[in-house]
Structure formats: structure tokens, C-alpha cells
Image 1 (cartoon, rainbow, N blue to C red):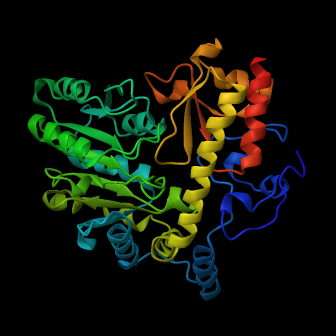
Image 2 (cartoon, rainbow, N blue to C red; image 1 turned 30 degrees about the vertical axis):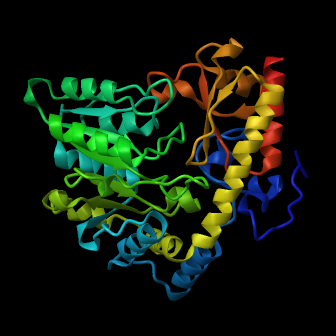
Length: 392
């Protein structure tokens, strides 16, 4: 695989700037989990250089020795300004935010604020596997509300799940994935308004994981859950992690609607002070100064979605793929290939391509794989070639 990419840097597409040899020097999970003969297109790390404004902010902080405990409101202020520019939403109040070490830590804390041990948490499956792990860690139980055939929220199914979750009058929460991982669906304002009405009717508190919100395709519009009517008692988790590849520089924000401010005040102090100061610096710089870089990334991901569609049509026409409007991920229905419930295992064993197994995404995940599009087009081309050879 050496030399597969040209390595010529470009100011246009950060997904084309690193060679395979450079990527294999990385020590993060994506590139160290599997042997070197495996092409890793699984965990949501992006094969990009760090955005220059973020790199500069971190470098400057290290040069100052600025590595203590985090303080101040620069992070939520930067996010509020980003939300106004990108989403036309001016309702993110800095005083109704709390730092959290990362989004999934924040999810656990939010669930603890609005439910008690043993209470139900509704999720739309197939969904990001840590939803299941985090709910279990919080000592809550999952109630699944499967997505519809169109991979969108099925409101009838959701309402029935709310009824089951609230059986006996116990509190319940709805852990909303917006945009949805793994499908890449961007929920519309109409859908989210209907969700908030159902939640209010059934007394269910909504916790929205909106970590992928910055990574929305051209022509699509992300709608913050807290911006829709009836969502005043909702809680949201946001971060620059997915938009700028900052998983190793952790930092998230728990954002409350106006009617949830008192809940937010109960977040333990130890949660916020555990947030990485360098992480906060990095995320602040990304939201404040990383817009141009993000635009280039989003354009590159749009190109990769089109490329993957063409490659699958040519080499694996039995695989069903509906390009998402957000995230850097592709959800592939491989059931027609006859590879069983876990085609990812076959692609790894026979094709030496690492993908996420759909089984870990809950009901509806069998026979599917998740592929990470945040890499060079040449690597996607090679991955599909290997996948086709695995079933040929």
C-alpha cells in the first residue's frame, strides 16, 4: 500500500493531504488496532491534518505552559457564535452550559439529572453502540424504537416506546442521536417538533447527542433540538470533536433549554473540572476560527459519498447505500450478499478491510456495516476493491 496516495498537500481538501505511510505513523486507535495489512475504515477518526487554527492554539498554549485546570466561558461563547453563523440559532445561552469531559460522559450525567437508576431510556436503533454502554453504565435500561424503512424516526414507533418507557409512571428519557449515527440522517425541524410534542405528551425528557452537527453535507440544514417549539426542557451535548477530529483533545458542552436550567445547576463540580484544559482550548479555536477548514472537509466528504455510491454500483451492486446528509460515516446494507449477520467479519478476514459490525448498533444492525468516509478517495477505492474480492 506504500505510495497509494500522492501526498501532495492541497488547501482545498484535507482528506487528500496525508499519505498512507504518514497515517501508519499515527498511534491512535484507528491505525493501531489492526495489523498493517488491514485497511482501517472503521472508528470515527479522520485521516486529516489538524486544522491550522487549532494547531496554533494548542502550540501557543504549550509554549505558555498553559496546561492547568480549565476556566472561563470562551468555549460556550465560541459555540454560541458558531451556532448563530452556521445554523441561524441564537438561543444558545452561555449561562445555560456546563463543561463535560466529552459528549458520552455528558450523556451519562444528563441521564442522571432527569432519571433514576432502573428508569428507561429510549433510543432509535440501529444507533451508535456507546449509547447502549452509556445507558448501562448509568444503571438505566434501554427501550428500543427502531427507525423506519427509510432510516428516519418512525413517530408511531417512538410513541409506543415512550408508552412502554413510562409504564408504571416512572421517569423516562429519550436519547436522541442528531444527526443520526450511523445513517447520517439529518432530522428536519418538522420531525424534531413532532418529537418534542410526543415527549411533552408522555412526560419524557429529551437528551440530544448533537456531536456530528458541524459535519453536515452541502444543501442540508442541521436543526438544533433546543431550537424547536416545545424543547425548552431538553438537554443537548455538543462538541467540536467530530467536526475537527479532536477525539484525543476531549471536551464537550452540556447545553440546557430554558426550562432545564435548574437541572444543569446540579451537574457535579467534579465533572466540569475534569474537562481537559487543552481540549477546551482546541475546541474553542475550532468553533471560532475553523470554519474555512470545515467547509473544505465537508466538500471532500460530499465527494467521497458520490465516489462510494459509484464504486458500490460498479463492484458491489447488491449492497444498498443511502448517502447520508451528515457525519463522515456510511451505513451499508450487505444482507443481499449472503454473508450472514456479521459481514464485517468476512470483509476483515477475506479482504483485510476493517469496518464496524452492524451487530453492535442494536436491532436492525445485522447484515450491515459502517464505513468511515473520512479518508482519501484512493483508500475508499481500494477498500471497495478489497470488499468485492472478499465476496467474489
